[in-house]
Every structure is written in structure tokens, then in C-alpha cells.
Length: 295
Ligand code: GUN
Image (cartoon, rainbow, N blue to C red):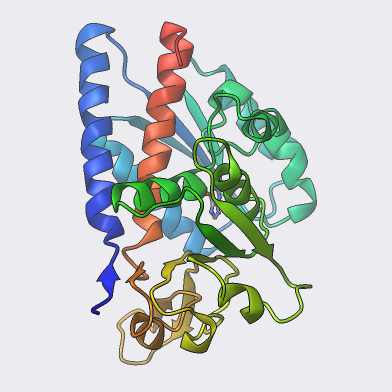
């Protein structure tokens, strides 16, 4: 049976159109425009391109966006002051600090300084706590994007065994919480760097999510025929035939895994566009809560 390519770009387009309609509605009925403030520290090329993509997406759906660029050498106080500026700005409903920060030691403190009501990444401990408890909250964009993608593709999660490779706080860990929630009802296994022989688990999986940030991690031999494979990896590998000198690949051996899986997400054009669409969704939701006092 031919593999089904889960087209994140098309699905994200649907979601973005829904957010654009909601933003237009807010403007007409409640007379406000949602705003997103993004802080970028340093000049990591991948982070720069993510932030640029987020800003373009805001513009396309009518969300106001503002960027604060700080040098790689910016200290803790400077970064916290930038967050506070956006926390206090009435035009801003969502605050996002692009990760990783050049100084990873201060990431927790910086994230905790974001107003939880504006935390559109869903990384603040209060929002993570609400997620764990199954309370309404701002849900991290990549895990929520993966869930939305699977739902919109008609892939059944109830009772499915999902094996997640990677326990990061941005993807693996929040995704494991979302999937095991009542109402979603998947059974989840999280594999990580200390898991012995992770193929033992992936071969049992109905759905595999690869989120480790390393090319060639998942091969065909590790996948049960008919499984669904979600590739979260975005890895730059050198490619002299490209103008940029590199190309993007995921964590999955796409060609060989496509021959055994029933459905697979491509890189690029899979999970990435869904993450951005979810950020727009979260920003519109944070705006509605803040300005209209509703969820
Ligand atoms: N770096 C990689 N993914 C993300 C994300 O979803 N949010 C932020 N803030 N930084 C990231």
C-alpha cells in the first residue's frame, strides 16, 4: 500500500485560515488586533529563520508582531527587561523568547518571568502545571500541532500505542502528557538517551514520533509495517548542490521508512508549519482571554 504523506503545509493552511477569520472577526466586533512580541538573543541562523517565519505568518493572518533583537552577549538583566517591556505592553498578547538562549543556564528564569497569560509557548511552570492537570491552558505549539495534524488526518489516537523518541521540554515531554490525557486516550512510551534498545519499543508502536534532533535516527527496520511516523527533526546537513550550502532533513530515514509506514510527515513541510499555525492560534486565544475575559 502506498504511503500517505501527511501534508503539514496544507493542514497548517486550513488552521491559519481559521485564525485569520477569527482575527478579522475580533477587529470588526471587538475592535482590537492581537499582538505577538518575539525576543531573539544572538544570531543563530536557524533561530533567525524560525523567528522570521513566525513574523511573516503573523502578518499573513492580521496579527500585529514586534521583534526585540538582542546581541548574543546580552546579559540576564537585559533579557529580563525585554520580557518585562512586552509583559507591560497593552498591544501585546503573546510573548515568546526564542530558544535556545546563548546562555542556557538562565532559560528557566527567563521563561518564568513571562506573564503566564501571555505565554503563547506554554512553557511557563504555571501553564505546564495546568497542562499536567488537564486544565484549560496555553498548550506548547509543536505538541499541539502534532495532535491537530493527526486529528485532521483522521488518525485514531484512542487506544493507540504512541512511542515518542526524545523527552525535551519543548516536544517530547509535553506531547506525552497531551496524548495520555482523558479524551485523547493514547498509551504513551517515552524513549530517551538512556533507553536501552529503543527499537524494541518502536517496533511495537502504532504511531512513532521522532523528536531527538539527530538525522538517521529511525530506520525502516525499527518500524512496524503500517505504523504512522511523525518526524519532528529539523537538521541542517551540508549539501554543495544547494545555493545555501545545506539542506534540511528530519530524524527519520524518509525514503526507506516510507516503504513500510502507512503515513509519514515530510521534512520540511510536515510538523514545522503546524507549529507556526499553533502559535498564531495561541496568540489569538491569549488575546481573547485577556481582552474579553474568555477562554
Ligand atoms: N526553539 C525551538 N522550538 C521552539 C519553540 O517552539 N518555541 C521557542 N520559544 N523556541 C523554540
